Length: 127
Image 1 (cartoon, rainbow, N blue to C red):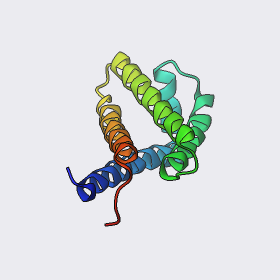
Image 2 (image 1 turned 30 degrees about the vertical axis):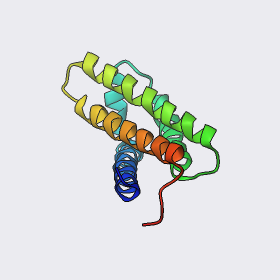
Image 3 (image 1 turned 180 degrees about the horizontal axis):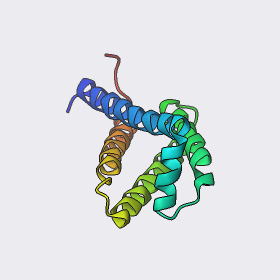
Image 4 (image 1 turned 120 degrees about the vertical axis):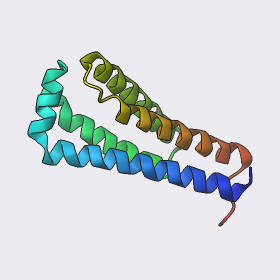
């Protein structure tokens, strides 16, 4: 696989992941009542909504920036655990809403794998 294709796949997966997280964040802020009902129906306290939103936005900043590889690794790990736990909670709720977290995990893993390939291969060359 050439560098150009790897970079396109990485940017596309990371971009779609970003859109998913920004949609979640926007909905959690602007549709707080709906999110509160959803969290309550799954047995979670509603005070988790805003800290989770802030953590997800911080994770996006960490993934898009190249300040620290360690922080970026932790952001990917944090997203992985959040998405897997969300999928588990949605499956337990038995309302068929687990598809979005499955899609998020797919794009997260794709982004992570191609980011690691870039590090291993030595970076993507300029397009």
